[in-house]
Structure formats: C-alpha cells, structure tokens
Length: 51
Length: 46
Image 1: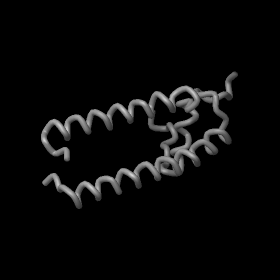
Image 2: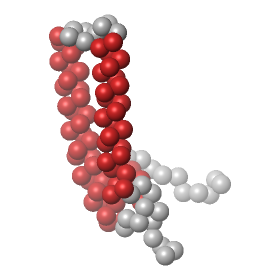
Image 3: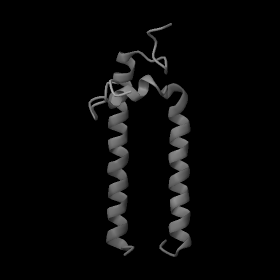
Image 4: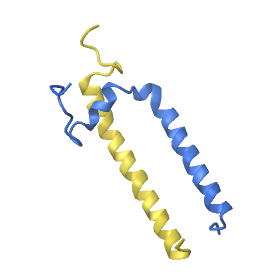
C-alpha cells in the first residue's frame, strides 16, 4: 500500500472532481450546506443568542 | 473505458470546474467571515 502516490495538496485538490461528478453532486452538497446553516441558526436562536 | 475517471470528467474539465469552485468558495467564506464580524460587533457570543 505504501507505493501508492501520495497527493500533494492544495495542488492536487482539483482531482476530487475526477472522483465526484459536480454535475451530479454540486446541488445536493449546496443543499446540505444550506441545511447545516439553517440548523446552526436554529441552535443559536434557541440558546437565546439571536437578536 | 479503462482511462475514464470515476466521475467521468476529463482532467481538463476537472481543472476548469475547480477554478470556478475556488472562486465561489472564497466568496462564500468571505461573506461568512463578514457576517460573523457584524455579529461580533453587535453581540459577541462570549
């Protein structure tokens, strides 16, 4: 296993798109980010730190 | 079929998409940082 080429980041970051197809996964990811943002806001407001 | 990537994108497409992804992601982080600075200015949470 050790002779596998180790990635060098951030230069090799772009290679993620050789594994994950953004045409399929970009929108689901963005909706997950939106979900997390909404969840964080709900928690922040529920602990009374909202305005 | 052997030399195709797992995602089906070519190296050139992946690099091209990544350039746009970096721009959009940087803007997202910038805006989030700005929003956090406003909250800190208005109502620090510590």
